[in-house]
Length: 310
Image (cartoon, rainbow, N blue to C red):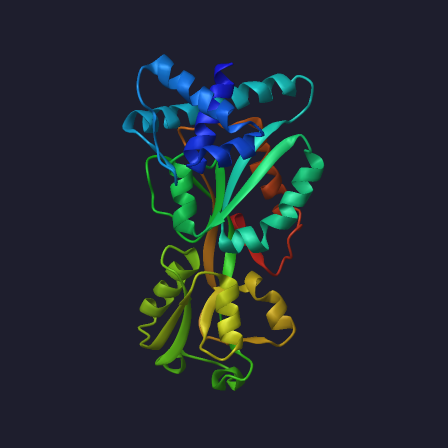
């Protein structure tokens, strides 16, 4: 069946390795190679360049990969509609999430969705916002949830659905932790702990520093919110983080929220998807259930503000 061959081709292209693809597909490596040879023979062109370390797509292979993703998506949509006749939601969803959402929001939501729709195969990819947006644009991901602003692009559908509160935190032993109110002058010439470039949290931190015209004594870059928290708790510096990522540390006194004067700092959490991809029933139901669970207060109310209440 051509769909099976296309699925093999897409898996090899994404894994960049025949043996890894064979393992994921529960096939033999010769079987995977035969599918690729059959496809190349049918199209009369080389689709992949093989080396001992990895597989690289040719220009023709890149074209086929993009179209194959669309074909497989349409096939899944057709299956969903057929199964819907029997009131069953099935299929697979490739969900992407930026670190804050993927590590602190989605696990609970995924557990509830998996219980309600056990026939859906759901795979989660976590990366920084820039990486996740790239995955949506190349159709490697069906749907993603990211924090922070996403640049408008003709291929993207961006749907804000929630607001996340950002706060400035320090170790409980930090000199600023004893101040009842903190203004910009107190935050200048401090050591700052920041995320890597491409992170939504990093983008917000950069904006905060620039908007308040803060000079930085020294900065330390970490590629995860957990690393930032550990560095702040150790007294290395202060940081801007999502309240939801430091909820436990604030409760146990490991970190302290600095009472920065001014309005609360908010950022958007958004769904993003590629407008050229078919919206399967499984993807549609996943997005709907995430929104429903948030609105039904499945998430702690002190973490978020609903977008329509902002």
